[in-house]
Length: 224
Image 1 (cartoon, rainbow, N blue to C red):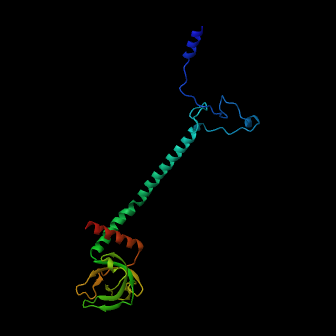
Image 2: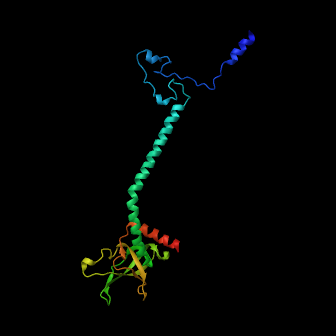
């Protein structure tokens, strides 16, 4: 009899793992809490927080699931925002490439491109071809292309313009005006630099224009 009892006892299967059953108010098989007995029922927990319908769940299982879902949701939102930003900025990048071509052309025609201030009243002189030339002193605050040693120096320049009357006069050709000059070297060196183009030679120093000229000039130097 003693041997038969031992055989029956060891014949019973041993469970592989057991979870601690956590009391779950509102689910069958668990006693009601003190609040429920006194007529103040608790809000039933969400079934999605548990791994099974009987309420047995490893500690922290529901919390990890909610955190993982939140992380995945945030990542999907970021991907969607990046996709929308790419679509919205696509026309802008195409326009920037076209504008870069224009700036590259004028940079290629210029030996020096500087940003600074006209220090005196430009003196207008009509040359033999009837074209106005405005001679002035220019303080170079920054060099966008060319000899970096010109930065901080004062140079004499000739601004060449096509003007028929006062309406054609450029508003930046005056004392105290801040501007960008696209310059080329002159043949007679008096002065040594003059505007490279009668229309585009003088430009307003827009910050974005300044940064674009620096970027394109640096790209050209790296290619060489």
